[in-house]
Length: 623
Image 1 (cartoon, rainbow, N blue to C red):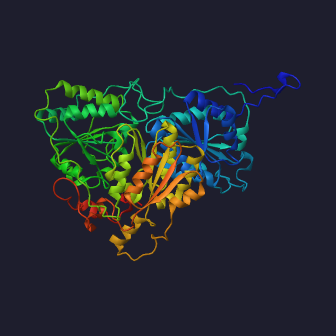
Image 2: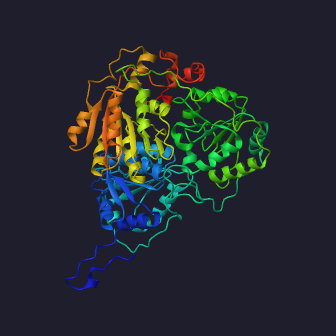
Image 3: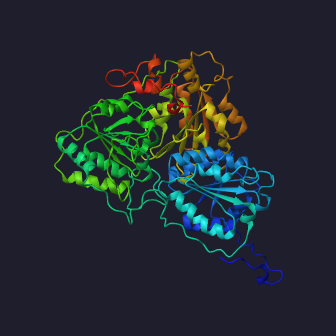
């Protein structure tokens, strides 16, 4: 589009604003990519982007309280709505605050476009405020962001912006997906030039936002596009192993991962499981990949999962990884049960276990599941029942409520009973995340979000806001008081936008997961992780007049609050007072358990040796 000529209208005519690089960026994202929201924090070196958003009127800007939360909003926005997510931040500390959230998006394959303002080019390498050019001994923003992005480029001219913008979008949406970063000096943002609207890769209508769907094409940035790809190879040893298991009626355990949701393949997974006659477990960050109420569902895999998964794996002849590489967060506690079983992997990326037989997907996960299911359905029917019987969910040791001494399980189950079937559930890390993952089924037609790539505390507050904006559904954020003190002031953002979010805070006046580790592994007695009491419900109520907020200490109080706020148009906050000495359902803590396991059959077995040897390893521990 050519630069406007303000003299062409004659004297006294309204002046047409010049067409700037930022106008090109915003127009392209709105018109060619379908972006409808931009998350960020304002600042001098990004203000031109926000000005362009305002002038265009086609994208809603959502201002966060902190850049980490802004990027978390973008992350949750994509996970719940399958649109490309965009975040904008200024230079210096604002830019650096994006890094941990972009790290989560990188690890979890979430496409986020980050527009990062930079000081004008003339000041680079001269000791300027917030210089991140890498010149003259300054911080090198390109080096910083390259480690947490699929694509990172410094935009040095208007012509470069025209070329780099579609490349950044393509990189974010490509395989593997993840963040793309454009570093935008302020003078380049303001530059005017004759720019043509540049088209990004073809995108369609917005993708699914929950429930069992499965159209022929993916969403705007979700699902998968099969055009130009080869069909799945259903003649190799992996497919042969699946058909042999079906013919023999052998027990099969399917492990469903996050790629099932990202590819919009839940319907195909359900049909595949039926054809195979298999049990199903899910990874912790893919709890909504399969109906948690289905009789074939045996629980969540991994260190915060259910012992019933291991019980079924020990009985299985074949274990099938669908949409997962089987990372340690899912495999912990199961590795020593894998030998002697055929391991098959249906995923775009190779499985971490080297023994897995890969089934080349060709057209992607959804098409691959359809192809292998068609082969199974064409073979002789499975003998016996539709799937082998199992004992149902079995739980790790945990406490139960006793009078006014309320426990994590009953609190989570009270929340679960109040959830709409299409709700977004967003859980944070720590003891709260363990309890939510263990005791709260994914809404049948909703979304279940958990950040396990980096597991940053407080991530759920931003992600919940992004999810609510993505699909407009009632969203429930479950987080501890430690997470609230880190990023809970994003409640203010929910208030500003009147979002239908219920924030459930588990207040134990401690970093209880760290406290438990100190007690079990180092003998306790350390003062670091227990705090003076705080009343979060009353505090939030005082900060935001008109916001429904309360502190509760009994299950009936929690139930009444959830019922009273279920249909409210705006947000609500409830703080539940809990004990910091309650042990969460977490596999490495099992050797120290005093509370019994709960569920059908015998109590849960002690943690496997592979877990006991890793008890001092932070890599498998909630914060």
